[in-house]
Image (tube, rainbow, N blue to C red):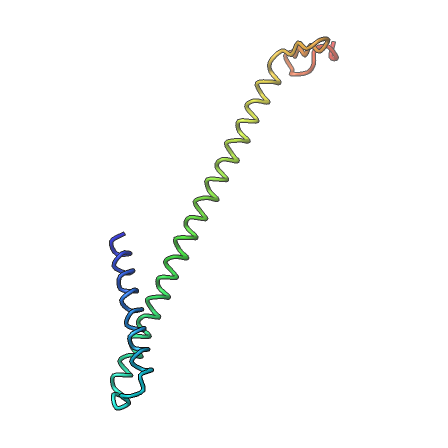
Length: 116
């Protein structure tokens, strides 16, 4: 986190330098500093690189978050399926007495009423 914070500070500094350089370039009254303009362009390139790196890091963080959420969703789905299956097993194995419905299973797992 400390490195990310330093990166943010550097990016903001670079962007401020860009703004200052643009103001200097648009003054129009001091045209004799060509070497300074080259330095300004280098600063612009550095700031662009910083911005690109920041974008890459943000994209990576977003991708990681998305992957984590997807994994969580998958795990939740699997847990739900297992729960449903367990519930079904419990219900199927329990002797159901609802009115005239009386499921009684013999040793082979067949319905005792119809197999006899």
